[in-house]
Image 1 (cartoon, rainbow, N blue to C red):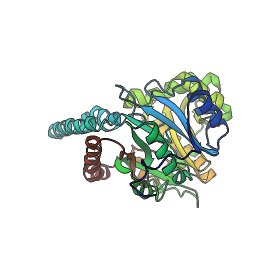
Image 2: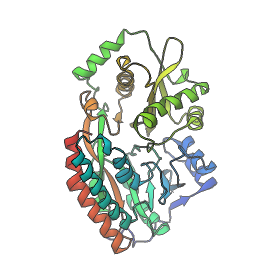
Image 3: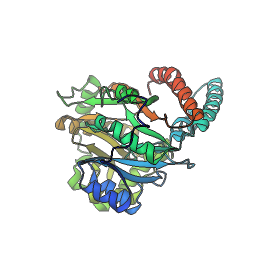
Image 4: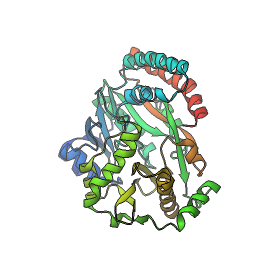
Length: 390
């Protein structure tokens, strides 16, 4: 498809954008990997978290389809739905991690200037597709076939919104970034993510991971429990463990999953939970897999009891469980960003992740602002992310 024709060609009549009960019915008949989850979102107004807001729908062509979310600026929304939170609020919240006062001042000034740019782009007036409202959305293998038809339909329906496709990287989807650029999208560096690929051969443990596996293999103080040994009665504790790690220890700008979300995920099996119980039967650590199409797995949900001594090694223990499952299933794990040194020492392959943005139908002012933002992020932020090890 020519790069200049995505928003001028008429929409494909076979592509349908659906809402409410119609969307729920279409999701149920699709080949997507998590129909129970998205059916609930589109049919009941259910939100995965209180800071993940926006209109949710489904775009379909034949039996294939993708979740769609429409967003306008709302203060405090998490980064899976808000570019402003990702590029501004989250970095500002972490300025205290910079040891140098001069570096903090420079970053604060730079973020202030970048905010003016994103405001000019109206960067939170967006419609996303393949948007499951997770920190890392797995990318289906056949997504390239949808780029043109889906983009044209969304541009027609939302002429004032930029079209966004998140979580684009070369490990999970080789060649997809180039195809998006040829289709008129521009790429904005998002973050560094880490892939663990066991699709074609076993995931070979590094010396560090071997040490972890050996250290915990004979320890009987904690017991692994599979999904069928985690029950609805555990929902409150699971939500508490997540809150301890991601909200209390890190940032409340992360998705604020709560007990009703966990209850629904357990009941409808849209997340596959694995956990660690102590000798009293109490859960002290948990992770939840989200798998799309049986090939690519992400871990949007992880938590552990941060009040236990560091020598308990709960995060390392959870990672050994993740390793065991991914290796057994011969899957690709996209293990998101953060803890870069930890992941590299255990075999993670770092790659640049992008947000792909289609803005050719927008005003000249907004297009120019997105263009400048892309240049700044790709030329300045990308080298810094690589050097920082994030």
